[in-house]
Amino acid sequence: MSNETNETTEVEMESTMETEATTTPELDLSSPEAKKMMESMVAEQLAQMKENMNKMSKQRDDAMRKAVELEESAKAAKLEKLEAEGKTSEALQMKLDEALARVEALTGVNTSLTRDHQVEKLLSEQQFRNATAKEMAKSQIVGQLKQDAEGMWVHATGAPLSEFVQSFAKDEENAFLFKPKQSTGASAMQLGAAEGGTQHKSNKPITEMSFEDYLKENQGPVNELGF
Image (cartoon, rainbow, N blue to C red; front, side, top):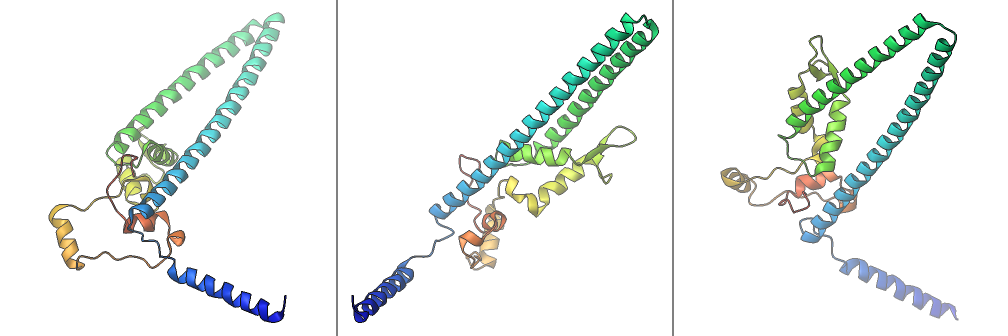
């Protein structure tokens, strides 16, 4: 093939690529297709987070169960040895310590249930995207709680539980967990008039936008999937 033919082919290829780049329409972020794509991305991210959390919980539970089994076996062997050697008082003390430990464990379970119930009650006042998002929020909140001198559950800083939950819900970094708030009625009309009936859109490509930015610019109606 001659050099002239090669040059002609290259020119035609470049022309074709330029034409395709010129004629390819930009993706409208307000279109149903774009919204559906972002909703799918959010759902996929939440599903992956839930799967990771479930795996971590299973690994933790398995490790704890094995540790308890080993501890129980060691205690049984020690108790049997004490009784075989006639060390009755030491065997009785060991049984007493074990009974007290069980009572303490049950008390801890009851305390945790009380804490979880309080958190669940406060979270029920919020509008989450779905059950997975709610569980993620609950996990983050519970991990930052402690009991005060009176046994009340508060944030690690000492802030009341209710105030901490409200602060958590207002934090922009947690916005992806909640349903977008809809503007309705007179407030929406005033907002539309103030902005000339238009909504500011970012010039960023959709692939470079964060979930939070997309949700701020595309606060459409919530669908049956919870988005």
